[in-house]
Image (cartoon, rainbow, N blue to C red; front, side):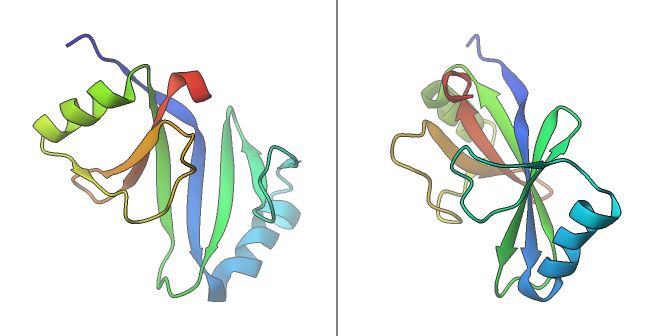
Length: 122
């Protein structure tokens, strides 16, 4: 199978609500990272993080922060089958995705969540 994966442009930090305001303030006011606006982000703060975009998501009920990464591929259907054959577990239950988005969630062996998305959507 001629399938390739590349790092995506998005990093999501899932932050417990009790640490959220201080974390946003850290990136906005202490480090003074460039805050991004627009592109349907809603109320979620996004910051330029080198050539990546850092999303800060408030997650009530979470006890500690998590990092989620994006991986892009040209063929999400074949990627899903390939990753299944390699023992990766789909995790689509963790967060709904827009129906029109060609993407799905998997976890690494270290339980880091990855959004596998189509390079056509980036």
